Structure formats: structure tokens, C-alpha cells
Amino acid sequence: MTTVARTDWKVWSCDASVVVTSALVLEDATRIVRDVVGQVDDACSRFRADSELSKLASGLATGMSVSPMLVSLVEGALRAAALSDGDVDPTMGNELASLGYDRDISELSVVEASTYATVDLRVSTRRPRWQDVRVNGLTLTVPSDIRLDLGATAKAIAADLAAAKVAEQLGVGALVSLGGDIATAGNEPVDGWEVLVQDVPEDPSQQVSLAPGAAMATSSTQKRRWMSGGYARHHILDPRFGLPAEIVWRTVTVASSSCLDANALSTASVIRGFGAVRWLEDLKVAARLVDAEGRVVTTSLWPVATPELSTVGGAR
Image (tube, rainbow, N blue to C red; front, side, top):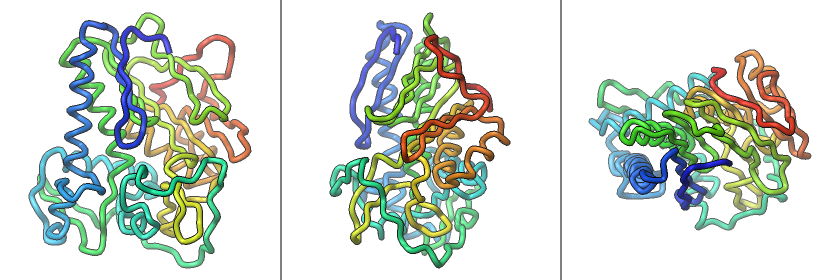
């Protein structure tokens, strides 16, 4: 990626980056991004007993007043659920915990990407629960038998918020990347926002130019993998069963007008399996899917791989 100034670090056990069009504001931009990430973590971390969501969990069944940040994160998760017809369901915290994902992935016995998840016998179905979550102003109501998991959408929302704040407060173009969730805001650099689309080094890669103000998200079944109950697990659950989605796609990358929407569509595509390509085409979404064997499938709006950069983004 051609950059003017960039900082990289680790957060939530994934790579984080901020890129700005002026080196003079890089330190301030990094501070803004770190602050947004910290606020999001304070509001909704499933792994911290002192997060707002954890502390209030026991009283949410009768409705409780929560912070504007937590409301925004829950509303974003419900938007993702609606956009994906329930495929991206934020009510599976209990299911993730029962599968062993009850603490940060760095504390689990990680499985290499080459070890594909073994499929459980799938017989019983799970009733969708996301519509049981209610937000009324600053009042959040969550049934007592539901535990929210806002991890995926919260990361995307954090990228959207952080990029917008950097651009607005510092008057520069900004790109924020949080573990594969990329948001841009403000003016683009002279060479454009060049992005390498590749999940792990063994995957086929493509360099694209992300349009200013556009966002991109990659959902992967190759990362956040662990062993539990004799099975190799990954973190993207099929809400019909409360189990890891079958691995039709290693990764799905989607470009959209917001990182939240891109993340919802890419995650839902992993869950939809073979049906994802037609679904994304019908939605007129630019997407790139890599199957379990490393073969690439794209929608018609995704740029054709050429020696020159192709622009993607802003299609939805």
C-alpha cells in the first residue's frame, strides 16, 4: 500500500493500522483510533468482567439505561442482523462460550489454518433470537437466556467511527484497519487507498484501490480457530445450529459504503456457503470469495485482476 504516514499495532489479538495523508498528524490520529477502540472495548467486551455489557448483563431482562456507545453498538449489530436476514446474529454469546470461546483467542489452544474444522452432526435447529433484543432510546432489553456477542460488528463500527473522527478532527484523509475491517474517510492520498486483499500468506492475493469514503471487510474461517470437544472450531457460527459454519469459503471480502455493512455481508456469505455468490450478485455488491481449495470467485462488480490497480468500493 502506498502511504503518507502509517502506524501499526496489535489490538483484540489482531493487526491494527491507521494511515493518514499527513505525517504531521499521525500521532494524533493514532491517539484518536486507540481512544475509539478503548471506548468500544469498555462498552461491550465479552471477555472483560468490568465492561459495561458484562456488568449490566444480569439486569438487562427488565431493561436498563446504558451508554450511548453501547446503544450504538447494539443498534449496529441489529442492523447487521436485519441486513443479513438473521445470518449475522449477535445473540450467540452463550453458544460461543459453550464451544470454548469464552476468553480472548490468545488464551485458547489455537489451531493452524491448515486444519479444517470438523463438522458436527447437525440435526436440531436454533430459533433466531436477534429480534428479541430491544433498544428504546437509551434503554436496552435483552432476555435473560441470551448473552450478546457484539465482537464482529463492534470491530467494524470501531473502524467506521475512528476513520470518521480522524478525518473530521484533523482534516486529513484517513484509513483505519482493525483485523481485516477497513474504513476510510476524508480525501484519499494521491495514489489512492491501495489495499492488498489477502488473508494469510498462502492465499491468492490481489491489489486493489479502495475508493475514498468506501469500506471493506474480510471474514475468515482461517483465523480465530481452536480445539473444543474434539473438534476444530472457528468463530463464525451458523445461527440455525449455534455451530461453526461449514467451510465452503476460506475468506470472503466485501466492499461497501460502511465497514459495518461490509462486515455483515462478508460474514453472512461465509454462513450461506454456496448460495452466497448469487445473493451478493442480487444485492449488487462487489465481493471476492476464496474457497477451501484456494480458488477465487468474484461478483461482477469486483475488479478484474490486472497488472494495474483497479478501484473498488462505494457500490452499496
